Length: 59
Ligand SMILES: [Zn+2]
Image (cartoon, rainbow, N blue to C red; front, side):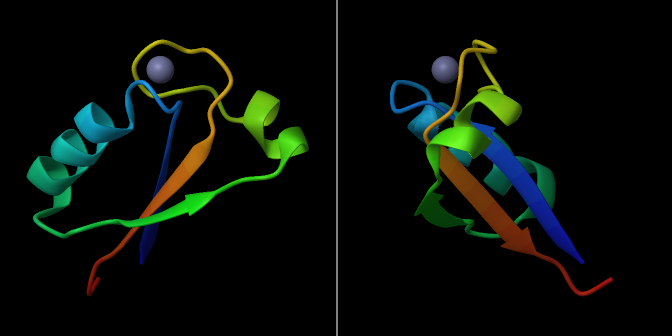
């Protein structure tokens, strides 16, 4: 299944580290559209995000 986490530019590195720890997978990083930015807050600071991190696990 695919796991999606969101992060602002400031916290993208921290979020990526946490995601790697959580799923033991290197996430794929993508920028997201403006409407998605407000819909999905940053994992760390809950401000609008700029990036979507996707980790695909086997289950
Ligand atoms: Zn943030």
